[in-house]
Amino acid sequence: MYRTFSAIAMATLLSGCIVHIGGNTNSEDTHIERELVLNASQLSTLIAETGAGSLKIIGSDSSDKITVNADIYTSEDLNYELSLTQSGDTAKLVAIHDIQDGLRIHINQGHSIDLVITMPSKLALELDDSSGDVTINGLSNTIKVDDSSGDLTIDGGKSVYVDDSSGSLYISNIQGDIEIDDGSGDTQVENTKGAVTIEDGSGDLLVRNVTGTVKVDDGSGDITVNGAGGLIVEDDGSGDLNIDNVKGEVKID
Image (cartoon, rainbow, N blue to C red; front, side, top):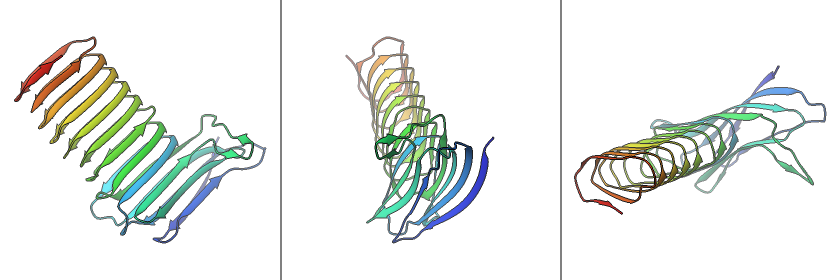
C-alpha cells in the first residue's frame, strides 16, 4: 500500500526547484505527487536525465513554460532526486534513483518516477533515459535521445538522433534528417522529409514515405522500404529484404 502526498513547486526564470526524496531506516512504501514549473520564455533547450518510470513529453505551441508532473513511487529509506533548474538559455530536468550518499549508494528496488512534461514545441530536447516507455509528441525542434530500454515513440520534430539499446522504436512526421543507432527491437520510420540513416542490431525494420535517401546497416531481421528518395543497404545481415516505390538509386552491398 502506498501513501500519497501532493505538493507544488514553482521555479521562476532565475531560480529552480530541487526535491530530494529520502528518509529514515523505517522503510514504508510512499506515493508522492509533485509539480515543477519553469518559465521558458528565454530558453532554447531542455536537457533531461530520467531514470526508471514512464515518460511522456508534450510539445505546445501556446505554452511559455515547462511543466513537469511527477508520480514518485518510493520508500522512505531510499533517496531520489527530482529537479528542474535553469542555466542560461538551457533548462535541466533530473529525475533519477540510486543517489550516492557519502560512501553509501541507495539501490532502486523496483520503484519509479512517472513523468508527464509539457513544454514549448519550439524548444530543442536532449534526453538521457534509462528505462521505461517514452512518448514524445508535438515538438518542432531537434530531438536527441539516448535510451537504454523500453519502447520509444516520437511524433514530430525538426531532426531526430536516437541511440537506443533495446525496445521498439517508432518515429514519424519529422521535417529533417533521422539518425538511429539501435541495438535490438523493431524499428518503424515513416512520413519523413529528410534522409534516414539506420544502424540496426536486430529486429524488423519498416521505413515508409521518406523524401530523402534511406541508408541501412542491419544485423538481423526483415527490412521493408516502401517509398524513399533512394536506398543504400550496406549490410542486410539475415532476414528478408522488401523494396518498393524507391524513386532514386538503389544500392545493395
